[in-house]
Length: 258
Image 1 (tube, helix red, strand yellow):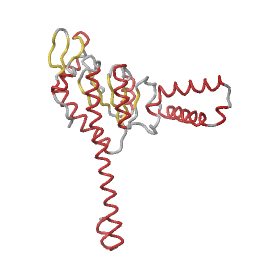
Image 2 (image 1 turned 90 degrees about the vertical axis):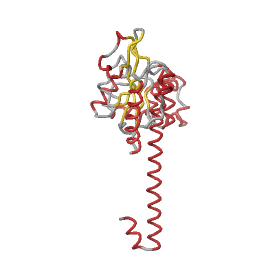
Image 3 (image 1 turned 60 degrees about the vertical axis):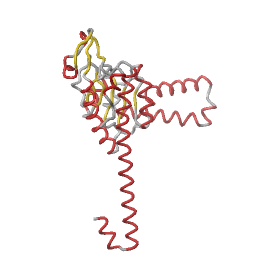
Image 4 (image 1 turned 120 degrees about the horizontal axis):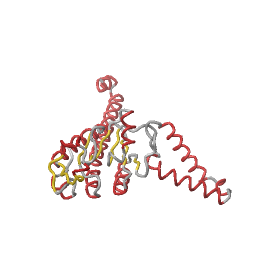
């Protein structure tokens, strides 16, 4: 369960939806009321949804799975980049490149090319190139870093997506759907929660709202990573105990393993 409190969500403006004329009827179950032409999100539903999402993502991460953070809107980029880096998870905050999931083999080639450029730039031969050539290579590397830098260490498809603004990131969600990759997302009143496996109703425009929801989700990942570490430590301890018993008594070692 997340440690979010109703008042925290209220103070962050998570309850503010869009103008009523811009709503998506599929969001009706998550809307509490209408006020001054704006839909108000039911924060009790937000809390319940975050708890459900937190439990699910915790189990995924505990199993060693990777979560890809996707947020290309300006007010979410810095928050998501910081949180994803802190958790050592892949992220896309500049531009979603079509086929990033469905054509992952090509993306891996681009990542390999980026690694080769990095290797070249460290070699003496690079310094011997003409200034213009070095500049062209450097610019290409910078361009690739902007688009692919956040997934540089991703050597296989992620096991889940966490999205801020499902309307903006609809291509990423469609690709995840095709590959049966579960999607966790902050969903505002102007969006359809249907394609999202774990919708978290909330304001996806205000910085404070995005910040509190992203960090609550990040905390759940943190807990999953801690549990994974504990599982590994327990397994190692059991193995060490079995090895110790093997030295003392081969018969006891067989019992410990069974």
